Length: 319
Image 1: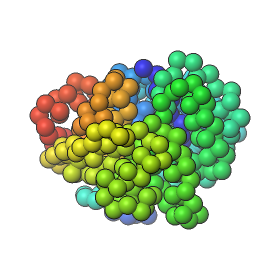
Image 2: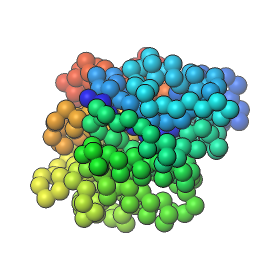
Image 3: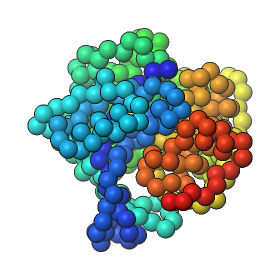
């Protein structure tokens, strides 16, 4: 199944030694970006993700195109723009907890995307659209592009999934962030907030309350991520429940967990599985990812996913 993603893939430089980024001397190059991570996860499971973005005609843009090719990501919706630059980010190495992140994406090629760029895209054969709350925060024109693509998807009966994926540092205020992202969420079939994100966006303190908020906006499916405790899932005017977390013997890097979760849920729904089954797959995908370095290199093949689901846990990795 062909699934569209809209966002900004970036060059990622990961520190090889623990400590603050300002003291790091050696880095390993990779590729990052919330939507890119989801695309990799979908491709590993046999789906065809079509990534819509703009890249600079520069070394990092070419690295990203090469990464898409190697990971089986459809590049037909990628616009390469001479004279513009591709965004970058740095990530520290940590023994535990969340790493330090530094972004260099202001004025990037992707941030200059416009609604008019979206109008020219051929969406034939696309069956789902996945967007996050990251790209709308990058620039006003990026927000406009997201809105236009969602509008086009709805007109074509393409189901939309939305992961709020909060980046408060990219917004003028929390109120602006919540208002904008909730206005995007109300057009989605499926919304995937983390429980802490849901509290900020809805004012509700429980997973059930967060789900009810989005159901009132018209959202059919809500899956609230609970970290190691799993996820709460709810279908509007129907069933709900909890999907238990998948134990991880060794947590290596927490970045990308939510993106792995999203890839699990979106792929399961694309295959016609129930929301309960989708939440279970999402939990496993997120757990597998945090047992690896990088933002997406640990995302599993279908065989690896099934092995974890059967075992009910994620074994330690060599990295």
